[in-house]
Length: 249
Length: 295
Image (cartoon, rainbow over all chains, first blue to last red; front, side, top):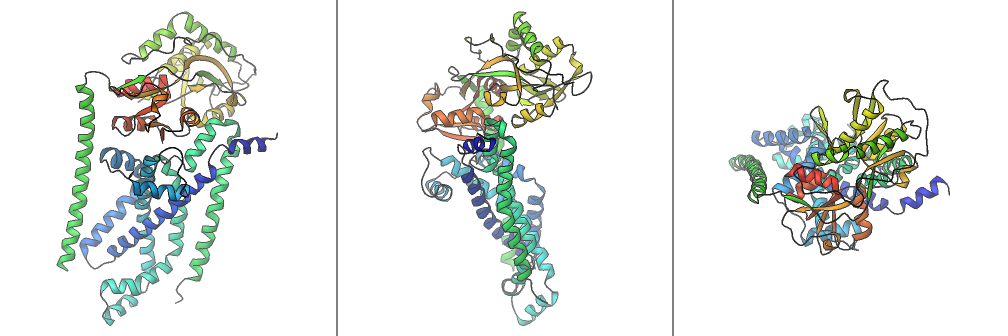
């Protein structure tokens, strides 16, 4: 038996595809949360009300400056252990089983894993929302000042001009930085193992290395290749979209 | 306009209050757990039951190391002249723990199949890999290194002709132990390194210098956990992601116990003290060290 066949036999004992699927679902949900929070933050940042601008600036700066690992550790030690915020109710468990296991619950109970999964989504979403907010703000800077002035002259309020005139153009201009943040998010989801999500790729990789140290290079190549396969389409999509959707001025 | 100003001020006040509540509740949380430890005038955590597996802690050596036989002889000397027992007792002082008497001190040593002429990593010094984060086993305390692994390593290095200040201590994380030895970044490893056949393909083992076994750590006073079988009704068990004990529990007891995996044992102990999990599992001597540090 060659090294490769022995390795494939070894790899069959580990849920490698489910691990990648967990990371992909974490990306989707925390990306959605980051986009929502980032849009709210940037709308507050460009608003004419100084206190809202101050709150948004504070929020973005604090979350950008704390390392992701610290944010994720804080989600377990501070939010879960100390503040007793618990997401292991029936709704959360059904959501977790439905998304990760496609409805077929595993033999062990997964209440705590659902809790950690949601905490990881919140932690990742909060952290990346600051980067998304700054990316959209750079898109807002590409919109000519005349657009905002014309919107005011026509009689639109701030929220209407943001919703109808400024933000659509800003998003179209900010697709490349947002795409970069999403690509960083895809790889940052491996930090979810710090929050206790043990079915994702970095925890699975640690387990495989511990039990199969003779395959260490193949294990590394497996996970690196998996992430390359996931990230390349996202990168290509970002580039084509940013070119096709750019506002032609 | 004024409504929005008030809303923004309310938002700022709310986040400030949340932050203060977080500080005060985390203080009261740690305060209550330490006062609980102080109220029950005894240790807060205990190692329960007998170990239910056997883990041989060996000395990892590169395949072309010339020291294998000498390390075996040094360990045998340490056991024979009483230093082994003395150091173990000193480290485990204050913890109700005795190593498995059927297997300790170790009597059967590994056969040295390989030999070679590899030189030292740094001429004139011996580079030894240990753990930096296992209290009473391999622990970095500022600039000093303490623990039973460190004690055995210092004795063996002494028998090989290296004084205590000729030893260079390097951190060897679990996943990197084989790589460190193969790339000759360390001369030997004393890092709670279990001897397994899979690892013997890549590294040489001398020893063992201790025979551990997997066991459970519980909060003192938990009467319904007496061994691995008693975990089988919805209990929550904590271990480190990807470690050998976590794998063994998954293979043998995965039917009804919920396994939580964190990155470090200290997070598991924190979860245990905060009543979030019911037991922590790993090798019994590591549990004893964690319990001694937590009490």
